[in-house]
Length: 222
Length: 254
Image (cartoon, rainbow over all chains, first blue to last red; front, side, top):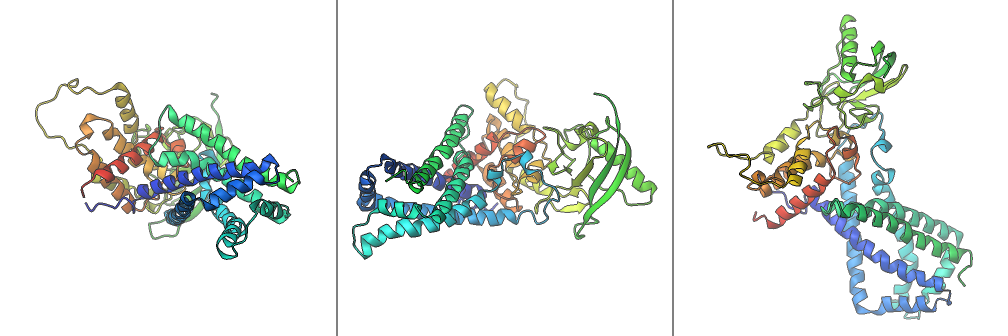
């Protein structure tokens, strides 16, 4: 029989979705870690120093390209998978008791991912683009701390951020353990640990992002 | 449990043939005993339809003991109905109460086209098995059963995977119509045993290729299949299939 290529097979593609997902998760740890420096309440001094390091260190610059590639692969593969999977049931059920056998967020990864993507577009255009513009085009010294304070003081942006964080939390709640399963890592001893760490991660990381945003909005960070 | 009789409203999918559009028809059944199986209730309904000179409802069934994998009804939004780890034939009417409305649909998947009413064509599963779900054994003298040592935990896991009856509830339950639980059970039962080693790599590659070709969706780990499987096939098998497939793809020389 003609062999299917690994990258065109359903399993191969899911494995790459899992790998890129875990890579993006590792980025979140750094991102939230640096953001949390805002809570030091030192007028953004430490945070700005960290942000400056991140935007100037060559290794991070290379990793940033990797991150972008990772996001694009993750999005391209999942959009294709979602469209394909939808086509596999041409006639829908009249009654579907979805919650009886699975979690709503596990079934809604496409929607949660799309919300995240919309959030990312807004997020990149105000923070990432501003940093890049200051760095390469206007060559001004930028102050990401100032920018966070300005952006998040706007209630519209706060709402967008909260929606983003909400989508992230539930996307991670399914995605974190699911990535390990797609990589074939399911073990009697370790899977319960992976699930527990995944749940904690999905609460702590988006929670921290939300706390920072709310703290800025309510003026707790000066 | 106390015996009782019930009157029910049934909404059943009727479809003349694979080209017919089909639709839900409403039927009333009276005096259904709580001791009946779900299929016996359908027998009563069909007797009623025959006596009214109407076409009886076509549905798959064979052993009615929960081991053949033929019955395949999607009852009130769940494959094989509300009971855990139970096939439709083993679902009893005591799962319902007097006055209930029950919606019965066929498995819905592109790879499982409806033949008539509640009967779907599950030959796609047969073709996946034909692609590699077997062990080639040359004939010869009978080998002593204990000549090949097998760890107890491997034997248990293999046996648990082999419990799959190929009913297709996993596909029916999955929002992606994925056949991963079925294929993973069939791959696992051999991959865990010494007898399955000879064809281990070609088996997983061929079966997954056939699965994709048949038009099943891909797994997104929602776990609906495991929750609805009448034989409680574990998601561990899907992880094993992912592992087996990745390893075989990597080392394959083709």
